[in-house]
Length: 337
Image: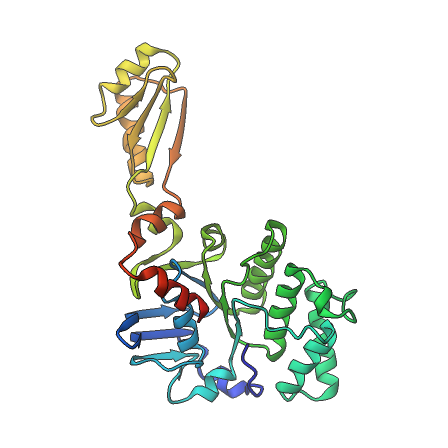
């Protein structure tokens, strides 16, 4: 969690029209191990960007470089218009970071943790208390405000961790696997908080996650990182359409109609018992319309139609491929970073 001095209004206004985050040729190596291999990024303001990848792919290293925690070996990166290498203090003044592990102090109460952050951000006493009370209310922690954090559940700790990140009113927030270890209810609560930050305050979220449903639910754009390289980028729907296996499922009332339809389409999968045909499809409206036009022209009526597209699990498994020799050990090193 970064704790810089509070940012100025002029710093924000000067970069209002710029992309929130850009990177060109960003690379990082540890010895002969290449962790990031010349990646390019461009992330608009007020959006959620998700970076997916297996352990060891370089997700955490990317966050650490963009948040000024470690230097890149090559390439350039700008956050809120500022170069992360040459103007690190200006970057830190505009960002917040929530890492894989909670940065809360177990010896303090929730309120004391937030007040400590307010002091680190050089907020005056009155503003620090106002901001603390506001965040306790927003994250539904008011009743637990004076309770020692050591007694908190995992979900409460993660909420407090994110609240502490927000004390400095960051415009860009890096969330590195923020819901790891949370139960489904706590995870969905975090999703609601993230959505509200973007929709209500225009915050930009850079999210790394191994929960593919999380990326599907939250992200405006998704990039897939594998062995330090960006292997794909796009919306969730764009990525799904790149993967084979999508199909249109047609069900018919009887075998006569099934036979008639099967004769109209090459390379279909037929299930005579279920009276269904599976027609390969990219999930697009033109493809669906073409199938319906063929049926209408032949006067063959389907009883039911459903469109099935690959999900992000299929995207992830297809694009990340098989492990390379030695990656098990490297994965453990990267996860520790």
